[in-house]
Length: 389
Ligand code: GAL
Image (tube, rainbow, N blue to C red; front, side):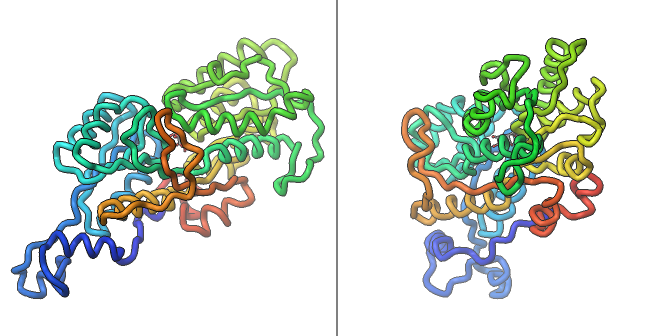
């Protein structure tokens, strides 16, 4: 994966901030190289400290997000305090407290529980520190300034669409497929404390509803409510266990065959696939493994897609998300406001948070090359190995 994040030259706003911070006039050096060139007498001007709080390192996407945000901000001259919280809410709260104590001038937060950071956010607001919610909305607080994310409802639509394509009910171009069904499907949702999980679920269910209504698709377990299908902290092991339980309770010893599983995230998908293969399905889709969806284009899952084991995933280009977070931070720290492209969708319970939404794509085996390799997200060797270099 291309880890280096290219931002180009500092924006005009950033240059102004640097000039203002240095207290110098026009033409004054603001970078280390030219300070050295003039004999090193000028102090090196820093762009200020930005705190970046990421949820966990157990999923490679958050590591990539953290790397991209850090390197992009550093290229603009900011100092970055990047922390991962091991999916533990008190750890994340402490990390953010520490960032504020250390003088962070802006915070970029991908929360674990979108409602659990109230006191940190109050402290940030009291110190005039702008807070940018990263990919996951921070809920129930006045003190979140901006939100950078993807069109999460549409991600859910794409997940359900990829399930319908995998089952043969739709073709990739959206036209009706050759298959007639009926199909047996089980449903998985993400972590209830993550606002995104509800958007993914709603987009998916709205898309599946006509097929559920006319019984082209049935859910033999009867578990069709997000309260029954959610996966705390998006954990692979939790998903594997639930899939095992579903097989035991509903399929084993009956003549029911499972045809597809809606999964909202690649880690969950891998847990589901392990349970299915252990129960004798597959090993590949061609051998009868149910169609399993996903999200994030994690390299291990991209290889499974290339190998006809996972059916599809949703590609959300974390480089573009990081770029938006960096632009928003730089806008705030230059005295401006970031530009939103959505000011309606993301009501956090207290206010509608101005948002910048990005688009996502469905990855199938036959577009791994065009979407992921040609764009430099993964190399062909990484896809072949299933491991990031
Ligand atoms: C969500 C995010 C997904 C996936 C999931 C599990 O908040 O939008 O892309 O990463 O968390 O980490």
